[in-house]
Image (tube, one colour):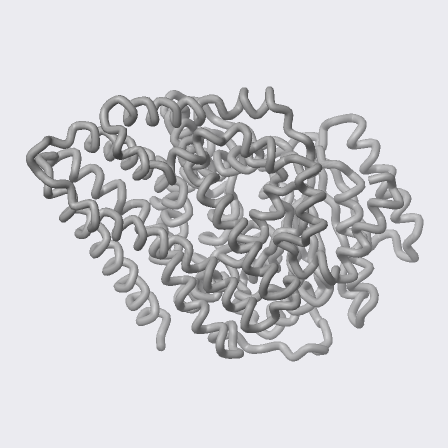
Amino acid sequence: MSWTRRRVTFSALVLGTVACGAAWLASILAAGPFGNVAAVMVMAFAIKLTWVTINFWNGVIGFATLRRSRPLDGVEAAPEGTAIELRVAVLMTICNEDTVPVVARLRAIKAGLDAGSGADRFDYFLFSDSSAAGIVAAEEQAVAVWQAELADRSRLVYRRRERNVGAQHGNLYDFASRFGAGYDVMIVLDADSLMTAAAILDLVRTMQANPRIGVLQSLNCGILMDSPFARIFEFGHRHAMRCGVPGAVWWQGNRGQYRGHNAAIRVDAYARHSSLAALPDPKSFGGVIFCPDQAESLLMHRAGYEIREVPVEHGSYEGVPPTLIDHTTRYDRWFQGNLQNLRLLAQPGLAPMDRYHLIAVAHRFVAWPAIVIFVGLAAWLTIAWPEGPVFPARSALGLIVSYGAIYFTPRFLGLLDSALTAPRRYGGIARLSAGGLADLVLTLLFLPIAMVTTTLFAIGLGFGRTLRWDTQRRDSYRLPWSVAARCLWPQTGAGLLLLAALGIGAPSAIAWFLPFLAGLLLSIPLAVATASPALNRLIRRWRLCALPEELDPPPELAAVIAFETANGR
């Protein structure tokens, strides 16, 4: 089946599902005299349902495609053991990061690649934009110690810029422009990235066998953090992606998603076609582009190169924010960054799939305020419902259950696939099921918090409030009650306001809103509890939400842990 036919088929499935859901809601609201309000509610519901439905069909199609052995259609397979002929730069960009974990990850990657054949084809670059004097000194010392261990010091390059121009993209483009002539491919890593040698070699061999691929993105999985929130989130997110990414690859094909790191990029193509200097002045919308990956990939694709994504888990890891608050802060940054990217829709020569990716990623975050609007109007409608018309409660309950089933199907299919293929990697069927239940509870509580947080942030954007892309917190920590209350009182207040309005106007309807109310009312204790070291120790002892890398760490992860331990981490 051609890519066009697959995309048309997928679009028909999504649009048909959304149309049915919107019509179902409209039939429920038609029982009352709320024409304009009902229309807004249907529109808001359809906006969110579109994103949920895309994930649903990605999961269903992905589960089906995982039953076969060919993950990348139209890509020439590179047999394991094929000699590496390309010159490869392994490039990590950092800015005011804790030096020990950063160096530990890059050292582990190098050690893994050095243990195999073709090690001389790889060089390593640590590009820093750090400004804190203590961190800069630590970086320089760590690199000097490492270089002293090497027979060829030139294979490890450390460079720090005095001015952080263009953030990560500035570093990558600077590398491609200044050093790129000596390399065919660069492996792009974030400060919290880790990849096994096998994963990197597979990316390089695939790039070597398929010169039309400009970007080859690996499927990134979270590595375990010592916090209950990160641990449960990683477990659920991995199983949602397990089928969702293969499903997306089935129809996106040669124009897939680039996520900004843990990917192989063709250096010459990047240098010639992916400069953001050709784009509109970033000052026209919030300064430096927060999410350059979207811009880089569309420019590369516009130049005729494919953007591919490997749809299977294979030794590619990234960090996860340790607390609920850190996670919502990252979502706000992504929201702002992907709203910025919408101005790129005006670029000439873009393919429909380029425009899809720009819109779809922004739509993910726009859909959350849409649900907040929907819930607010639903509460008003409930309170104002006249005595005459009978509310079709059975139909409404059926719609809620159907929506929940659509939302959680990708996670369920991911768990089912793990149960069918390798349950022992997760500690067995019982632990898989318990982990799935823990993820279900956390997701139900977390989503309303994230939705209200994003809505408040969107309101702030409207009044000129923006974020900077500061260094993120990566290590787990105990979250004080005072910090949680300071950050989450608006969410708690929104929950109390909604509860009070329903309690006064329609107390019998409170049960209908509990799925939304619970997370808001419990946001502060939830944030504190899911950052608790004591709870984390208990969860680890029970091996709840255990991941394969915890039960059987790959050599690179074991090397990182050993290096950090030896250096007092």
